[in-house]
Image (cartoon, rainbow, N blue to C red; front, top):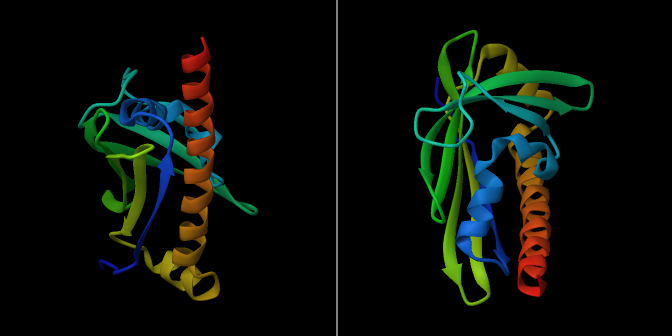
Length: 161
């Protein structure tokens, strides 16, 4: 059954939207940004983001470990990167993630958002003990700070170089 849990956060980055997009759309670097997803790999021979391309993300939270297959839904360089994670056992979309980039006075306004689409009974019971939405929102803020640091460092290097 669908849930209404969702959230978003944004950050201003002193780098062009294309630079920010290129960092995010290379899912093999996700472990550098996310405090929860420590590794991703492309599936089916893919090497770059495009709608319909799949990748697998490996996550950890405390002692818990899990992996999810994700399907890219949007991949518009400098504008938006989005994907949905799948509950492999149920074969259903579980969570939708979006990164949108808008030009700003200093470079890019990056917004990350999530929406829980479906949750298993076991996960709903766990949610009663550990409110997942709040934890995910904190993770988004950390992810955005790390992307900002990397994009601005890259931008500084390109300007000086």
